[in-house]
Image (cartoon, rainbow, N blue to C red):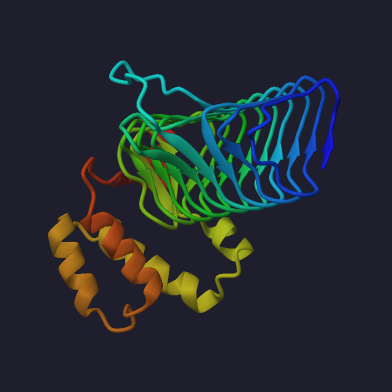
Length: 266
């Protein structure tokens, strides 16, 4: 371990081997880190925080502070973070609200400057939150999702795996996996560039395009579209199953689909 003499580390904190802690950082009593983490200057880890291996906590970031929830009455809650995350300057991740609950960040994520993850959020693996993204309480962000800078995700709203949210977008309805969200509660096609970068071959992208067309462009309602998808030849695939499971379990409703021409009018 390499702990700067100016850092304040509680003697009962559990610090993994190879971890570096910078000057004026504060690490509380209930904090546990895995090996080879880096906690940079003036970062604060407080309350029950469990870090996996090789996480970088940026300058001035605050992890594990109490939730901004008027119902919070001091319950024992936590933040759990996986491995290999980069959490940049001044990010905030708050612990859960109800007794025993937690806020969860997966592995391989990149949280850029000033991103906020509220109480009881769940962020999957390899997600990207760009500068000043705000996730409301109980929001969910799926694996490999990309949330553009300054976007605001309403509490209890879900962003599906491999989805992309354009910067400065308000998100108040669920964004299905693989889709590109462009304005309030509207998607405009697949996240084609993101899917290609993540290794989706042409056949997988073609299948998802067919799925998108049935769900958003056929004029069918949600149940009719799902029924057609279930019997459509060539759509029996795990990618399709992921999409169907997501839209079938929505509580806030699914974003509407719009065309590029409609977007210009907006």
